[in-house]
Image (cartoon, rainbow, N blue to C red; front, side, top):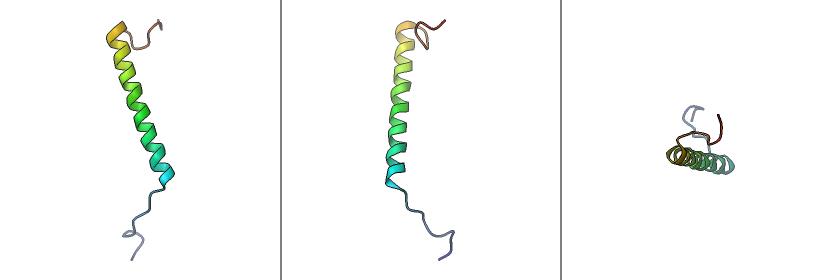
Amino acid sequence: MTEKTKSKALEKEKVIAETLNGRFAMIGLIAAIGAYLTTGQIIPGFV
């Protein structure tokens, strides 16, 4: 096999880190939408 046809094994730690990163990003997005819907501001109290 050549270098191009070999598939690289994913490291378990990187998969877990990226999964957590995505989940926290979604939580932040939901929090931002909730703050905007309840207060009308993206960052409540920030002028």
